[in-house]
Image (tube, rainbow, N blue to C red; front, side, top):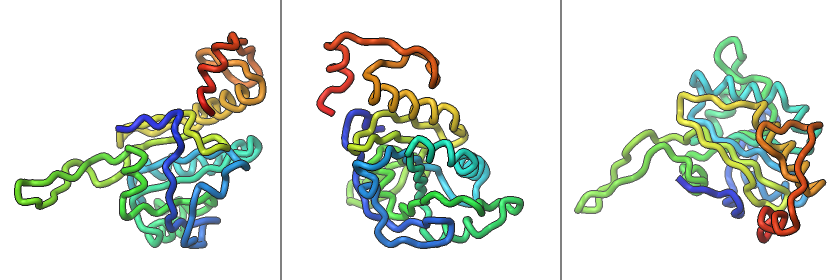
Length: 210
């Protein structure tokens, strides 16, 4: 499992479904550099049980992310055609129709591998034959990426454990507050509460080279 905090978010060009019904051939997070913060999250698979609750939960709160100038992007190891079909399926029938933010197709599993969230791995025997151990899907990884393309927060849940949209928004608020004010945010901090003024040395250590 990789810790990407403080590092450049791995780049990719992949197919994605945008606006709920359009397949984009070369989707990249680079389009948001210098413009928006990005919440980039992985989920295990289309047409499952926990995944639609998360995907729809982010859509239900999408205006709160937009008001913060944050782009939400989802990703799984399914194909773009699977994403598209799921997006056309009514929610009462187990679908996610109404979701409009991008869903990236990582059928080659390279994006999940580069972000360190694969739930399994390849093994090779003495003759060089490959086999896969574990689940060939992504854990529930989430990465908060700043406008410079640097990962500032990550969380990875096991497959049965859904994430908190509230906590994601709290981390967005904390990062943006620090960027704007230079003050650091203590435990359980929420927007509108008092933060803490670090020493200049402390600021430098938080910022590092970013």
